Amino acid sequence: MRTRLAAGRFLSRVGRFVQSLTVMVLRPQDLLAFNRLAYSRRSSIDAWTGAGLVDSGLSEDERMLIDRVPVRAGELLILGVGGGREAVPLATMGFRVTGIDFVPELAARAEENARRRGLSIRTLVQDMTRLDVPASSYDVAWLASGTYCSIPTRRLRLELLAASAAPSSPAAISSASSSFRTNRSSGPGGSPSGGFSPG
Image: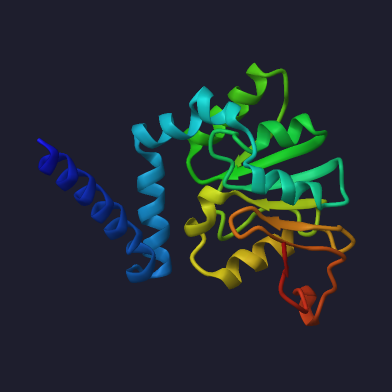
């Protein structure tokens, strides 16, 4: 019996490792399609939108990160809103949250989860790698930790965060990498002249 349990645990770990290899072997467009399929599964939708996860709120690292941002209210964009685990506490803090997700049911459930808690968030369903939001219109841009691998390259993740946050905005955040940048400056073409500062 013990041997079978140990073998089961080992195979489970091997399975998670093999699944993580998809990020390394898939082309960017294939990775997007893979993630869209994975997050659209009923089991994934239920897991990301369950009350237990949503009520768990921000992680300790995410709380420390948002505490370092000088903005305490304003327009906040979440790339990868999921079921609202990050959106709900950020809206509670006073941010006007707009969440983007590429799975329509996740976006709808995030709004529903916020409404059940007496909050209002706005969601948009779109490809997060081709944002269709007014440029530079958010005070804070937040890359949800579960979305990190859904946007194929680090450069694209940083470009999306920088493009959606206003030039005068004090912060753009990536909760996945615990990094942020304040007082953005732009290089040619409005792109950030430097990377994000370590968080």
